[in-house]
Length: 142
Image 1 (cartoon, one colour):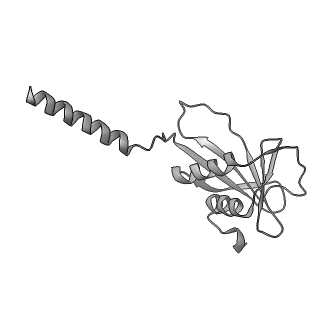
Image 2 (cartoon, helix red, strand yellow):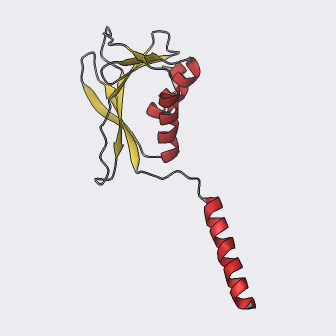
Image 3 (cartoon, rainbow, N blue to C red):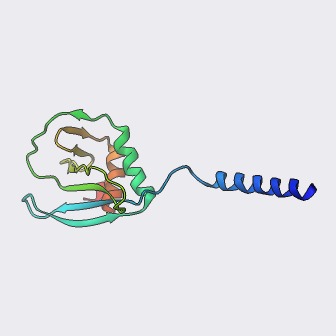
């Protein structure tokens, strides 16, 4: 009887440890593919691939917390960068949405267009964080 109680207690403790160590987020194998505009035309080359789940989550958090405007915008020039969230697994299907980024003339903010009809100009802090994650460069150093 004592052996059964000890075994049950040990099993319960193991489950608590396993449950406590998990952060509740499931790694979906997501990545972000970033393309950079080359020249003055609407041509892009592969620039960077972000596979670190923490960085992918930070980009998602920034984009989820902003207030998007429903507007069809017509910019003077093609986007400086664009990026897509993608899944590594073929088991999951998701509609890819293109995000386009323009750097402001003062190089302190970025403007983002999501899909065909959503626009936002990020504040300086979000602009800096998003740009640094996506490019590995500081916005202020451009």
